[in-house]
Length: 171
Image (cartoon, rainbow, N blue to C red; front, top):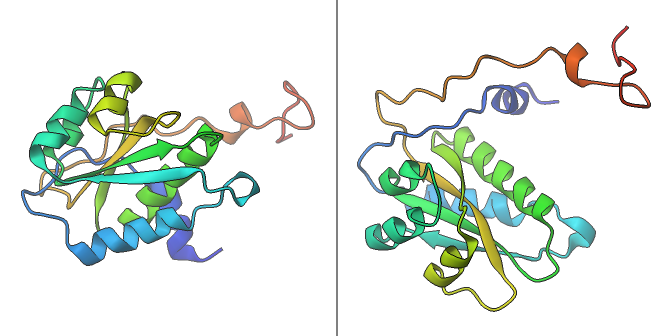
């Protein structure tokens, strides 16, 4: 595995504070291109992306969830739309691609859950059968931005099992 890619995976963290400047169009396009190339079940690509840059629209979208201050403060939020017959797993894969692509070009990101899907459906004017439960806030990290404080990760010996749950992967 390429060392830079692996390091981005191991060190990816949510960034919640952004500089007060718009995201460069080229940076946003690179991030969206990475989203477009996300793998999906049976290559159905049953998703859409709504790029929300208008400050008033970002405020309306932020009201669709709890803990959504990153949407309010980021210059851009990407709403991830699961289209009919789409899979939530694929939407999660797309979110991770967005976050990794953003980190690789110096853009901070924060995944957001929109707890009030019906409200998000209305705010984004989604077609019938589509849903938006997740979004990713994007922006250049503020000088004082620190990744969310995590207590590290559980050891592999606590989460990896061999052949069935309860049999340690590592012996």
